[in-house]
Amino acid sequence: MDNSKLSILNKRDLTELMDISYQSLFCFDLPSLKTLFSRLGKLIAIDALCCAYGDIRLAVDQDIPDVHLLDISYPENYLDHYLESQYHLSDPVIAGYLATLQPVNWNRSFSIENKKLKYLEMIDADSLGLRDGWTYGSVSPVSGDSAMFFLGTEEIDSSTRTKVILEYIIPFLSEAYKKILKKIPSKLLSAGNLSVTASEIEILNWLKNGKTSWEISVILNKSERVINFHINNVIKKLDAMNRTHAIVIALKNNLISI
Image (cartoon, rainbow, N blue to C red; front, side, top):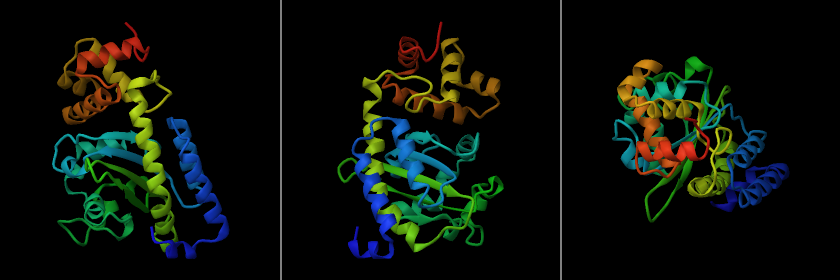
């Protein structure tokens, strides 16, 4: 980034950002990544955090987005609601980021179809107490894959200072996130480690018992689209070839039991 932008930050901000960026070089697991975001949360407001990785440009046109999704602290069941409602197909914040590769402020974003409808209202985030937020990430010039971060807040925070902080630190955290994803196949997974969620383990258990996506959707009272998203996500996390392979890997690593 342009170093002249850093002039608006005070010495404390710069010192903390430099240390977070340095520590990100040694971040190899999810708890460490959460610690870095916790430290960032002392500089800017972060009340809800989600990460996504993949070719976002293609995912925004897919009914089931082919991305790795990591829910760190979003409100319970909100991401399922977001996916079931297919908000990603017309999300102005994602579109704004892909068009500019700059941090996008949620409170200043409006529905693509209805310019009077604010983004937070469009995705029902305002009902959860979120009043603002930012989306930013990094794009691989070779593969086109993006690491994107969605940081929601319960207060209005559209300041230039926050934008500058995100421009500085997110590229470092993006690399840490990608490092963690690359380690998934080679490291033993557990429910409390990395990013295999309780919902994904529950779905793996139903798959083990021979249930179809539709049957699981009825049992869990979720749409079949959401169930398939979780299945595709956990297959990628486990570096599996298909559902059966994912079950075998999950059993082998004691994520589920016979």
